[in-house]
Image: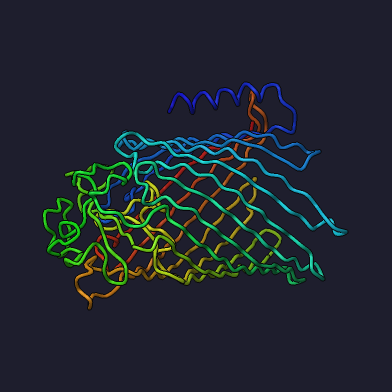
Length: 439
């Protein structure tokens, strides 16, 4: 996979030496240190590096574009965690009607992630298509409509594969006070590829059907509800009570039992699933931007999520892994939240820019803080996440060989996640340095 990534980058560099202005590329390298690299209670520090490459055709006299982007991520102390991501996409934009600001934009893209053998469970393949409409109503007030459909497939854990429909409606306005306001409402619907199937069902993707792969807590359907022979650990009394795999309104968990830390996860990790393979969520947000001076700007964003059905699927238990694949461990459909963020942008002398901000999220989940469905009095999991960040960027002009300009960045992020589930109570400090140049 590294050879493939290097080959694509080399082709891009060769093309860049003979191209016109309608071709555009970018290479960036970012390295950093994090005292809790994988965002979990074990607080393991590590160094990581991201190598990114983008190259595409963006003609100035046409309404379409096509481009490829890829990245390679490595970890100093964990070479087995190396992975790459790849995206190939194309877009087409057109204007309609008497108003030149009326636009329709169509986008199609394919994405894939490839990990080494120990972490293949994070691999995915994805295709998506979207249509975005901007229609001027009156007094330069636009109507913003969009629809996106995407299908994501996890080859080594098919129970998390899904088809998502995501629709949005919104508008934005600008005022003489140099204030901008944008509001938007979003509706997302996920249809998972399958409902629950027991471990003896040979149709479970990527796992043994003889009980050594996925098994129900409590020993499977008809189990005794006390954890049975589940080697996954952290059973907390099991989640089934002899009547079958599902309870508590259709919620249940299955242990991932390969013994020890395999599939890139610890023993205590379990899979949260439901008998209903669909879920829906409504969200709304408002973003207020204010230009304070010619060189200073503020942005405030408020977002609220409401679950129409509590059916998000995710891995729960003894690990959190946002570096691995956030959607696997903290599916946004699995919680409701109130979110607030504030960003300050300051243009500095000598072609420098400073951006800083803070954020706060209050998240409520639909499963117990103890991860134990056998206790009906158990409080549901809730998290308070807060933090701040700062980035300083410096632009250096000029051309070197095939490269044009150089952007340097230095950043810091602090994150604190307070939870009534000990697995998810952690903090982190991250420092990064990045270099980017255009082709």
